[in-house]
Image (cartoon, rainbow over all chains, first blue to last red; front, side):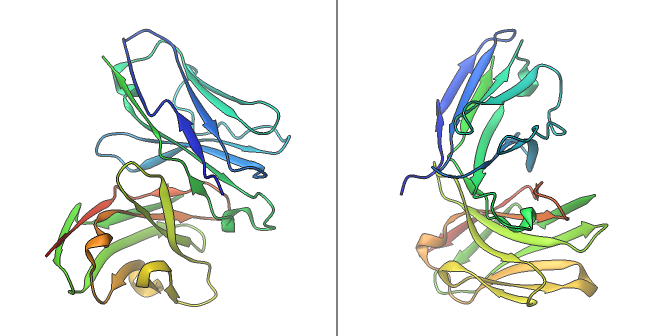
Length: 118
Length: 112
């Protein structure tokens, strides 16, 4: 079946512009995650959505970052007033969300969006 | 808090040789450990995960990893490397929630 898809695959923007990154999770997956991979860094957790619950935004690095998930499916990560340090690969993942132990849910990752801020 | 350290950002092996990728973890609670692989232009794919059921975990593509609490390690091995194993490998840890903390990754190249 179809995996997690992300668009665009690459995005080049100018400092100060806003960008939107899209994630389409695997159909039926109720949990969705965003991660960021900066040059020379490991992947860092950004935000987590589970069903209709309030999202866990504890990993968002600043208030310029926001995310929403419409209809429990597609998610958009928005970065306002982009800065050069926002340049990174942004990865989205989804999981079934049905495991009684959420940390045991296998997260399925998309190919990522490479964001370059000039 | 949980974190992992991957030793070696790049490993080069000959085809047919042992693949050994090192991962050490730090965790304030019993850890759950994962190895992911990323092929070029693809998403991360789960190779295997440790969930405390057994210390030796077997995964896909002939990989396995052993959890050693005394050494706080979770090294990944494969007895015989194949050209298709060339990829980037990530070790990750979680505590008792869904937030994965990843290492910086190890790129594996396989020499013919």
